[in-house]
Length: 172
Image 1 (cartoon, rainbow, N blue to C red):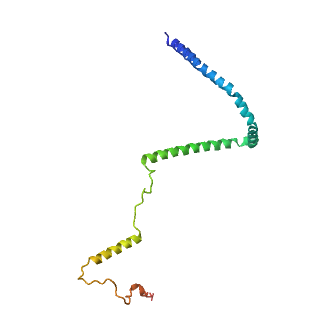
Image 2 (cartoon, one colour):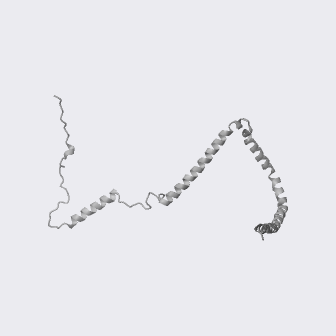
Image 3 (cartoon, rainbow, N blue to C red):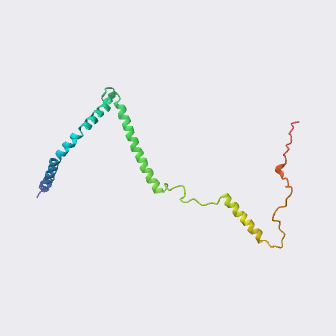
């Protein structure tokens, strides 16, 4: 047999099978439309005031677009529409590329560590230092004379209590 004849026979067979399978589906759809038609009419009748209200609002909102002056700025609408479309496509492309690169390079990891490192406060540091000093004092042998407290008396004056006298420079 010629390949063209085989193709024609196969085509007729496929069309015949498609009609046979579509026929019961079409009858079921027709039956569903016939059975649901009264409910559709009842719902549209109940919603008729809202449909008319929506139609009136749409006519009112679209009134500025029916004016003749809008045709004069049609090219501006086209230009701005194309610019917005290009901007949206470019932004979407950049967003997808950034997400892909950041997940590939693992840049999107959080900068802040999960659990902050526990550090001691100044009060804790002072308390530990004081405890170490007390331990060191208690470990000293009893034979060595140690002054635990400073003797009461006048404090020695340091350099901070003295005035700094500046010398005058002369040009002569």
